[in-house]
Each structure stands twice: as C-alpha cells, then as structure tokens.
Length: 394
Image 1 (cartoon, helix red, strand yellow):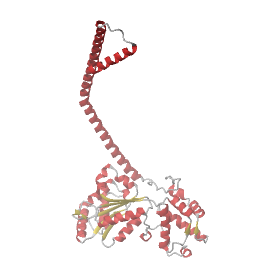
Image 2: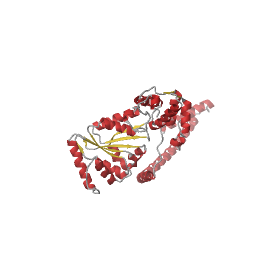
Image 3: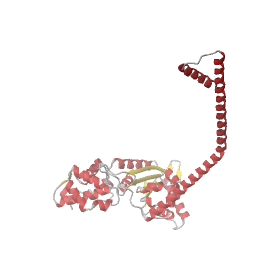
Image 4: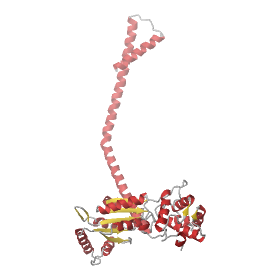
C-alpha cells in the first residue's frame, strides 16, 4: 500500500522469516557461524535458543539455504508428542515408509537410511523447532538416535531450536548425558541501540532504499526501548510507522509519531503485560521467559521434585558421613583434652612448688648474710629477677 510512496520494491518490515532480510547483529552472526561450522564438521547436536521473535527461524532458513546442496532435511514443528511419535514423524519427514506403531521397524528403517546417505556423502539433519515442549522421554530418544556414527562423524545431525526455557529443561539432572552431547550452543540476544538503527536501515535497503524514510535519533531510541531489541517487534512498530507516515504524506519519522503509534497499538499491554519493564537508563532489556503452558509447568514440577530428591539424598548422605566421623573422632578428642588438662594441672602445681622454694631460699640468704632490706626499686628488680629464674626453670 505504501511501497510506491516510499519507492520500495517490497515491504521492508514483513513478519515472515525471510533470510533475504537477515540482519547479522553480533549475536546473529556468531550463531550462524557456529551452526555453519557444526554442519560442516558433522557435529551431532546443535542448540539454538532465543526469545520469541528474536530471529531463530530466519537464522535456520539461512543456514539451510547455505547447505541446500548436500543436506537431507527432516523438520519437526509439533513437539507436544511422545517419544515414539517423534521417531515416526522423523521417519515420515525423511520420506521413508515403515509400519506404523512398530518402533523396531521404524528405527531399523531410519538407521538403514542414514547409512545409505552416508555412503552417498549426504548429511541427514533432523531439525526440531519449539524443542522446549519435548518431554524428557522424547529428548532421550533423540539422544539415542545420535549413537549411530562413523569414524569421521555422526550419521545424523540434530538441530534443537527453542525458547529460553529449553535451556532450563536441559539443565535438569536427568539430562546430563544429553547436555554432554551438545557440541555447539548459541543464544540470540536482543539488538542493542546501534543494532536497532542498523537493522531498520538494512531492511529498508533490501526493500529498495535506505533513504525511503528518515528516522530521527529520538524515534530510533523509542523504537528500541519499546521493542526491547526484539526484531519481530521492531517490524511491527516500523510497519505501522510507515503506514501512518504514508497517510500523512511525510517521509520524516520523529519521536512524536512513534509515541502516537505506540499508544494506538497499546504496545506495552499488548506485548509486554506482566513482563519486566525497560531499564531507566535507556538500555534495552531482553524479554523474560514467556509464561509456561500447563504441560510445561507440570514437566518443570517433576524436574524440581527430582532435583529436590537428589539434594535431600546428598544432604542425608553427608549427615550420615559426618555422624560416622564424629563417632570415630570424639573418643580420641576427649582423651586428648583429658591428657592436656592433667598436664596443665601438673605444670601449675610444679610452678607453685618451685616458687615457694625460691622464696624460702631468698629468705634464708638474707638471714644468713644479714642483708638489709632492699629499697622499693631494688625490691622490684629482685622480684623481676626471681620471676625470670622461675620461668626459665619452668
């Protein structure tokens, strides 16, 4: 509608995950580089996470486009499934046929297919989107699929894509073996202020012209603040901004227009209600983990029960070990204390006897030699000498 007014070939802020419009922020470039390398090296597991709308699907589509010639891809998007259903869906998406409900037949068909692809120097890849919804059993089944390997690498590569809670799920004690299999892990971060500006200009340029619309510094700051650096939300705001600018026949987009559009969209309530607010210093704040479904909450509750059970088990073991150590050491310690007490008492008694003997010797010496009483200063000096002898004797 507004493309001809702005001189654009395409809509610059579509919500579709089009890799032609991929903007490589530092975070997105790093993720794409890691995943690209992992595919080339036949890494078994790859993990890509990010907030809703952060660009995960766009990155994956660009990755697939780069390796289109030698990849054999199976995609699973519905992840509220059982472990057996996951195997069946993978087999089906690879274009294979096996008797439904027979897990042994499904696995045999899949393994024969993987070996055949390896012989043809092809790379089968299983892409699982929204992987945060997978059960522990399904994740364990995926791990078992990766056991088939050659001397040069895995016969099946798996890319797990999901929201941040996927990392929380993988951190549970029961998935330690799974975590150890993940060769490359990437997380897409929100765009910072400079990247927000670069993102908007990049998409305008791909659509036809960087100068199609002029965004003021205030406008860019407000877009970044309200979108919190999430690409999809930047697209929503900018699409309405261009439409509003078109209706008013102007190409300059300033702060007042952004505030107007944000207010009309009820943006904060629509997209951020109940979530953390932006920081007061203008820094972008990543959106927190979205509210979990009842299924996800139940899964997390089970994980927490397992975790607490393990913690309590460890505490109980430590308490038992401590009690055993106390039983073994307390008699020895008590005996050492008793011996020390006896030694100290004997030492005090010996010191008292020696002090009395020295006092008697001094008196006898004064009497025999008719020594006159000492002055007070000399008396003090004499006592200090006696004390010195006393402690040397002790």
